[in-house]
Structure formats: structure tokens, C-alpha cells
Image (cartoon, rainbow, N blue to C red; front, side, top):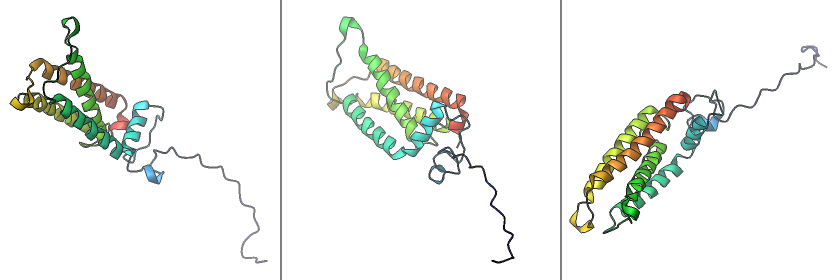
Length: 179
């Protein structure tokens, strides 16, 4: 036996707790969480932003698919929605559909990190521009549709509601919006 090294027992070490999958120490998640650990891992908005960042390609594909369907339906020749009791239910449909379009656009992260205020503002602005173009192009004679300012107002209302909700959540959970 060599006398160079003392015969000591290794001291017991306390095991290090496993890192949260969104902490920078976890190598596969570094880019997705903008190198910032969640301090409150129960925040559903923060966790949703991390999931959206991790599944960015899937979300982008979903948005493109949704956008193609939306363009097709909003430009389908002579498409009409029934008006039971004289109520324009199509306005609520416009709000929901264009709000969903904005929700998916924000979730793609094309204008910045998902959950960042910059991304939310730019995506909402792009959605408002698209809604205006979509409504104006319905006036093309071959489409046989009408340009209706009330439709544009409903589109914009849905977009602004979703953009506002996303923005408020990003302020409430600022860790999800860093980047």
C-alpha cells in the first residue's frame, strides 16, 4: 500500500437536488428559457411560454394551417352566415376567429421570444394589418363578398382582446417575457 495518500474515508455528500428542466443547467433547455430559471414553476403562463418555445415548429405549422383555412373561408365566394332573429352572429365568429389568429401568431414567436412584450405588440399590430387587408380584399369582384366595417371592427376587437390578455399576463409573469 502506498503511503503517499492518507487512508481516509470519503465524506458523505448531500445529493444535489435535480434541476428544474427550465434552468440553464439543463443543457437541452438553455435556449428555450432564455437562460433564465423559473422562480415560480407553478406559474401556468410561464410554463406555457416554455412549452411554446420548446415546440416552436409545431406552433408555427399550426398557425400557417389556421391562416390558410381563415383566408379560404373569408374569401369563399358568396359565403353567408345565418342571422337568427336578426342577430349578426357572424360578428362574434369574427371576434373569435381573428382573436385565435392573433393568439397563434403571438405563440409562434416570430416577432420575438414567446411571452415577450415586443413579440405581443408586433404580432398584434401585424394581426390588425392583416385583418384590414383581409376585409378590404373581400371587395374584389370575383369573390362576391362585401367589405363591411362592422366585420373589421369585430376582427380588430378580437385581436385587441387577445393581445391585451397576453400583454397583461406577460406583465403579471415577467419571467416568461424575458428575452
